[in-house]
Image (cartoon, rainbow, N blue to C red):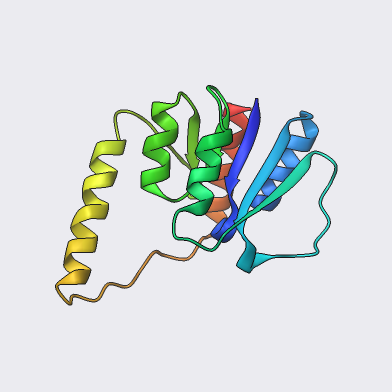
Length: 144
């Protein structure tokens, strides 16, 4: 098992790295080259940089991930692809994507995009709370 993180905007990387280290599980951060960092991570963490294209990180994760790997993303499209590949897919707000909820999530994403294209402004996602971080930690431990 490996853990793949859609890392450009993932606010729970620190939780994932710490918990994976306790179980000696490899973590792969996949991020855009525009987010290049000299930050050093522990030995069980690998960083893969991809081009700045819209879905470059998603494509690389899907190329690398295998059945029963864990993928952490807030991207519903990537989540759908990873589920189809047999991965466990988690959102940083502390819920798992499943075959039972992915269609509804994709539909809501489609409707939101349609509204934005018609000129309606939305507030965007709510900020991550300490409660969200705790919820993610508990869920992530279950999957480990």
